[in-house]
Length: 103
Image (cartoon, rainbow, N blue to C red; front, side):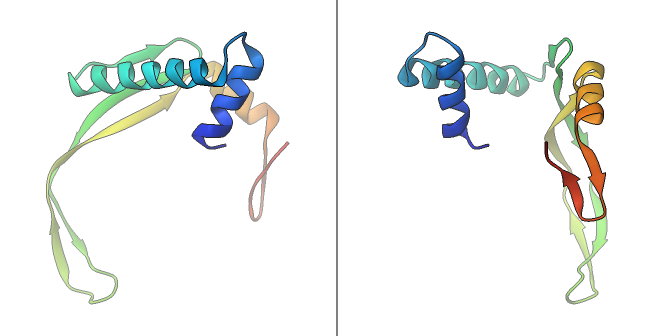
């Protein structure tokens, strides 16, 4: 599902127009982004936790040249699903040899 499809479904499930649904989604995403940029976590009980994590600088091997390269330290966003979401996914979706079987 992409952002446009998400907006369509949000509008269908609420009494909002697509324009209002887009505004609502943009506001929520902006709020999550702003909170993460301040170094704070966003915890949505039952859904999950958005946070930021620092990664150390490291040395890796370039698979094409087989030469070592240095990867700089950085800060990355992270999402950890909540227990309820994880249980629902495990209960609903099945693992197949080629990946995940959709409902």
